[in-house]
Image 1 (tube, rainbow, N blue to C red):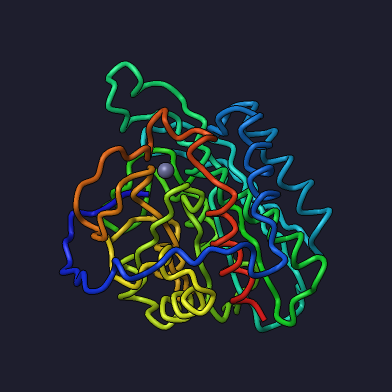
Image 2 (tube, protein in one colour):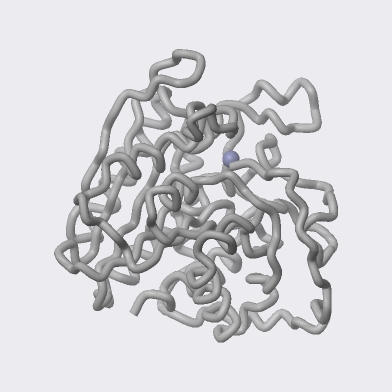
Amino acid sequence: MRKSTLLLLVLLAGCDQVKDRFSGPKTSFDGQAALGFAKAQLDFGPRVPGTPAHEKAGDWIVAEMKKRTDSVIVQSWTQTTAKGVKLPLRNILARFNPTATQRVLYLTHWDTRPTADEDPNLGAKTQSFPAANDGASGVGMFVAMADVFKKTPPSVGVDLLFVDGEDWGGFDPDTTGAYRDALFGSQYFADHLPSPDYKPLYGALFDMIGDADLQIYQEANSVQMAPEVVNRVWTTAAELGYGKYFINQVGQQITDDHLPLLKKGLRVIDIIDIQFGVLPRVHDAFTPVSPNYHHTTQDTFDKISAKSLQVVGDVAVTLVK
Ligand SMILES: [Zn+2]
């Protein structure tokens, strides 16, 4: 995903009073297990589309979902990139209670960006990177979440969607508003919904949610286009005592997998911690911070934590009744 330069006024009242109230799991979601599932992906290597590691990781997700969910749909296609490269991509849709009309859609991307192009070290910009947070964390959380729903089936339908090709290249739309070099999987899903009348009650994209220093601001496009979903998620987080992590302020506008779905009329928000790294808390979504490990070779396993996955997993599970 990519940040835009749009700036919004942020009010900073009272942030320092928000205490860290993390006192262990609030649901049966297992953050430590989620971390283990993230590690399992890193062991394949960078999951760059077109590589053996990508193929193996996709097969692994399919197998893990078949063990846990009621139905698994794989969407496979060949994507032509803006530069004419042809990529074998797969979306994986794992469903609980597939016939229920009332559904919740959760999505996360499973691919890895080909190169660490934001790395401050010039020599590293062309290297691949583990992408522990930017990809593996969301997938790890989803596998652990599937364990929860297998054990305690939800009353509504739940769709866990693993989208491919989110992070391939540039994030600018073309003149028609279509994304031609990134967000491939979410665009494909928007164009190939599981049924013509597919309309989840609400949806959430989880991206970069493993950061050991978790600070999730309300993403500005989400606030603008699906404010009721943002409100529902942040209220739930506050009720769980997670106001320190789900910060009740509007942050940056981010181009991410929720946009093709929002444009299709689905109520999907982006839950993302774009300030990646253990930092002194700035309590401000716009102050430039350093380090930021996003799209660098520093996006490694030691930068993500079971605690952060627990916080986000607890919120995601609590939202589903
Ligand atoms: Zn990325």
